[in-house]
Image (tube, rainbow, N blue to C red; front, side, top):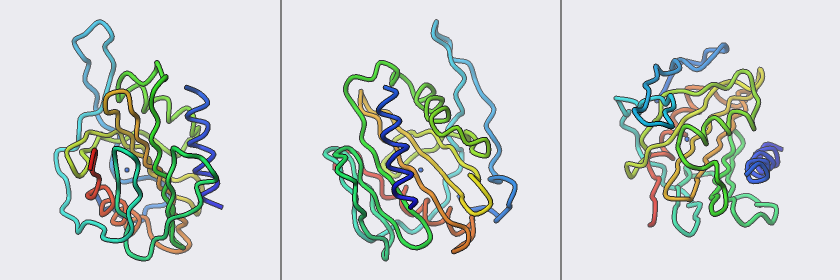
Length: 199
């Protein structure tokens, strides 16, 4: 169910062209970042990368691989059907699901992290999901972060990076009937620590 929804979100993205905290039902405890203005003609407000990165044990289960990037899932997570879509990889367990997309080529909007983050927010159109501070993935790649509750039992986080003309999107969705938001964040952090571009 969740995998199908995440796959549809990834397909919509192409058609229009990833810290611990409390289990607060209202929102992610991380607040939206303050913004700074770029000193260029095409200036845009973009959150700064988080200053502190928590130390986590990297996930050591099965890998989800694209041609130029890969991420490792926790033990117990299994690779899921990608519905015949070549640019996505999916994984899940009973608590959560992940869709890992590699999008590239013709998108003239994929020119900055800020632009792809704003586009992802528009595509998702979930009022409870907000943009948070940018983060640094396992190999030093900068990524935007979106996080929040979709409804009373679903918590989502999305991370996106832009490397050359290739966009990578990590979409996480957790069912809080099977675990807490704090536990979800630990799982996400363990996977983000394994991010490897051009392995």
